[in-house]
Length: 246
Image 1 (cartoon, helix red, strand yellow):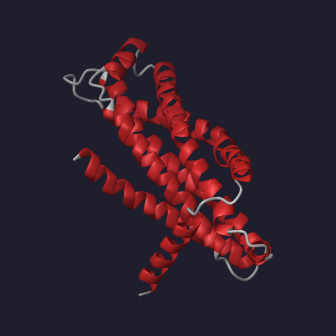
Image 2 (image 1 turned 90 degrees about the horizontal axis):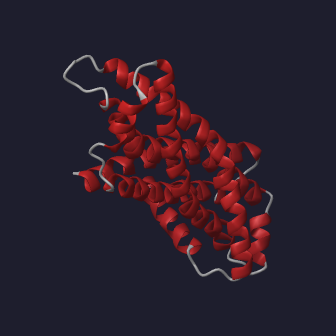
C-alpha cells in the first residue's frame, strides 16, 4: 500500500507543478537559469564520458570481430548504432540522474527544511509551480541537445581512437557510419531522452520538495532521488524499447 500511496502523492505533486505560472516573466527568467544550471553546466562531463566510451566501443568491437567474413566497416556501424540507440540517450540520462537529480533534490530539500518553501506558500505563491516547473521545462528542452552532442562526440571519439589504435581505417569507419542507417533511430533516442528528462527532474523534485528534518534528511532525499530516478530510467528504457522497436 505504501508504494501506491507514494505514487499517488507523486502524481498529485506533478498535477500541482503543471499549473499555470503566476508570473510569466519570472518563469522565463528562471527557465533560462535552469537551462544553464541543469544543461550547459553538464556538458563538460558529458563530452568527456562520450569521447572515451565511443573510443572503448570502437576498439572492443574491432577486437571482437574474429570472422574474416565480417567486413571491418562493421566496426563503424556497430559503434554508431550502440551510441545512438543506447549509450547517448540512456547512459547519459543515468549520469544526469546522478549529477542533476542530486542537485535538484538537495536544493529543494534545503529550501524545505529552512522553511523557504513555507514562506512562499504563506505569500500565496504556488511553490511547486514556481520552483519545479522551470526545472522540468528546462530539462525537456536542453537534454535532447545534450544527447545529440553526446552522439556526435562519441562517434568522433570512436573514429579518432580507432584510427590511432590501428584497428580500423578512416575509410572503413566512415563507410560503416553511412551503411544501413535508419533515421528513426534518432527519433527513438530523442523520445527516450525527453521521457527520461521528465522522470529525472520530477522524481528528484518530489523527494527534495517533501524532505523533512535537517541536513541528514536532505542528504537522504538526494540519495533516494538518484536511486529512484535511475531505476525508473532503466524500467522505462526497457518499455520504450519494447514498444518503439518491436
